[in-house]
Image (spheres, rainbow, N blue to C red):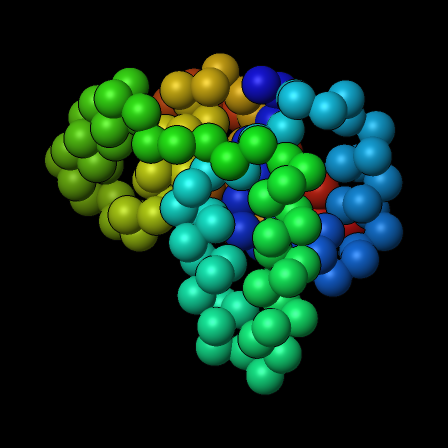
Length: 134
């Protein structure tokens, strides 16, 4: 796995943002994954949207084309240790952000996100790219 995509990047791809679509097209199949917690966030968003069925259909199509990464025991171990470390340092992040970061770390992949909370370098060894940055 080379890249793990955060929610904001997947949403940009689903909405046809050219920079993100071009970057995804340049990455060989099987080198990109989406954490299961990102899928959960996207299903929630689709269910709350005005175009529920259309958005759920887009999401189903996406799930067929990009592997969904589960929460493994390694991810869970990293999550617990990282959350404790962040709390000790007085740094607060959402549970989903920590799980997304740990999924990327567990996969040995670069996290692609536009989320500044994940770009702040507070998570050791997390490599981040922002495909939406100007």
